[in-house]
Image (cartoon, rainbow, N blue to C red; front, side, top):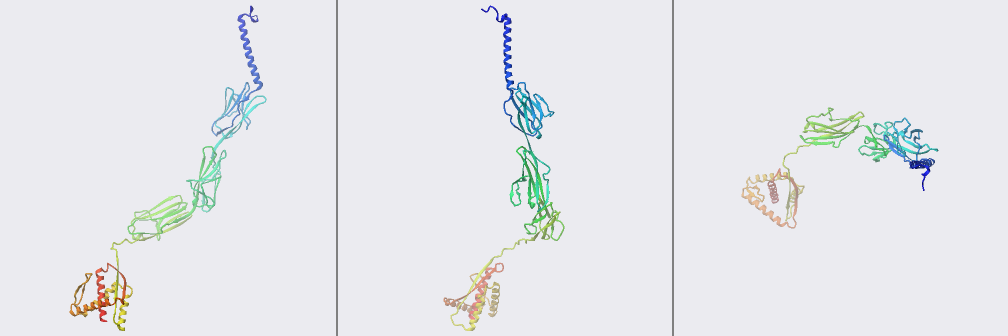
Length: 485
């Protein structure tokens, strides 16, 4: 049936013919596909995303292209209209620029050590006709940086003046400025309101005073680390002022004593102690120990006197002076007596009541004498000394009148009283006692009392025994007088 080879060729030539035909068909299909692709042209597979990079880092911009074929990719900087790369070649002389690709599909533009000036638009371009391109934005963020000018430096102002602190910073995005006091202290504004912080590039302080003195922080931040700050010292000058808490202090001889003053001044003051009438400075010695404790514009002054003596009593001055003025405070040291070792004194109060009665009419003369006696006994409390003198004088008179005879008689208190030894005087004394008892019985309804006020005496001068003796003697004298009348 197939007596002759196909195409009029031998078997060997037939195989070659088949191979050639296959190659021709395959090549023709590829060419047709390429022609169709060339007719359609290359396209961007995905949209380019913007890139944000901190200054100093490496930025990588990417561009993905489909069906690039024989076309070429170029990178351009739009702002400057500069061609950076074409295909695999770097055109610009900027050594920080580089280009790479992945299988001719994804093309990368490398920018090393990015600077703030590198920020802007970049174009990925395909050299088709018409030209195809995509634009990507490169954002370079810069951490905040505080400028030396016009930012304020340490400031010195007089108390009562107005002051403005300034702070300027650069960065991308634009930094925010915040003011704070070091140590979390409050910032006092014009309305005397205390706040923890103030926003803005300027801090205004009106009528500055010593409480405003100290370090202030200007803080700049924009979300890009690190946040930076600058320390500005506000120095307020004012003359010295001294405060004395205890202006009068006392001490015993031999006691150790410390006197204190508080001084405020700036520039820092010279502080020392003197005696009030002596300009000589009290220096550190075995007897005196002056101490100064400094804290910014405050100085705590202490003067310790070891073993106070008589010569140390008097006034002392704590003095502070600086270039703006001088002031002093005064402390007076007085003597406190040493407690004595004498026993304590107690007081005894004794009440004495004398009652007199009468059952018969009393003549005018007798009544006048009795009123005189009542007046003597009813006045304010008789002093025990007066009673003792009166009793003693009366007893002596009676003793001399009764021939100096004496008898000892025991009373309830155990005291012994001398009496006349004569029988006549003894009988008279007994009759006097009997009359006194009768009068006391008959005056149950019409008695009149003459109370003596209470008298306070010291037990150091008289004992109880002597008091009872005096009272009993007084009763005897009154009884004698009554019998005579």
